[in-house]
Image (tube, rainbow, N blue to C red):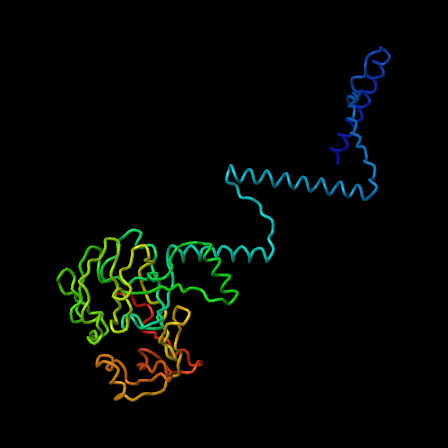
Length: 371
């Protein structure tokens, strides 16, 4: 406490001395050194005055002008983005598409791809007749490679699909349009058929058939793929040729020689008529009715479709070979008076109703390579 009192006394004395000195200097006209100098005046910067925009009165003309201005800005921005996309590869902003537009574009792209694949790469075909049994059965669906012969020449033993040589095979879009209108109008159109056979003779070779055996340049040709030995009761099976194959043509024959209409009947196959090589069986479907085809009155072929009834093994043996009899236990006879053909169970047909369609699928044949 004593220290505080002493300190206060000292402060009072100091203040008194300072006051005396100040009075003396004021009398002498000197400045008051003990008085704190006022701080320098700082001029405050004037705040910028913001002119308030007058409120726009709404009108139809104002709204229309704003709308046109915004539309022009969007167009300009879209133009700049498109130019940048073209020259610099930047991603272009796209407008949101409608549902119909998206589905329509997807459909057109799929259609275009399907046409390209079908025309130049692969095409599917269904086997309608038994001329290639037992390699290909009625109801087999095969994929055909259409570009393989653009790089390699056809070889002996290849199974190929080609245009029927005796029909009009000229490529003329006007004829196609005319036939389209004829179909729409219900008028009969000239048939356009595709055949599938095996290459037996190559260009420049001499081919001859003697007692059902094919000879190429005097040497017998081994054919393990034939369904059964040729029936020598048919003249063309017993004796054919000799004949020299032209340089740009091939001699075609079916594996089922007794039921095949091939080059022995309609001549050589020109290389320009070849469509492609059969590659694989992607589906196999046994028929529940008679699958035999007959020539139609107006041209082309028509399926028999007759009802099938059980047939005894003894009676079926009259019409089928021993090898064909070994491959089946049940047999059926077509009830169509124009046909009366005999069929083997599973191998040729499956007489099941439609709701048991899975029994008609030949699962063991799906995926088989065509050789």
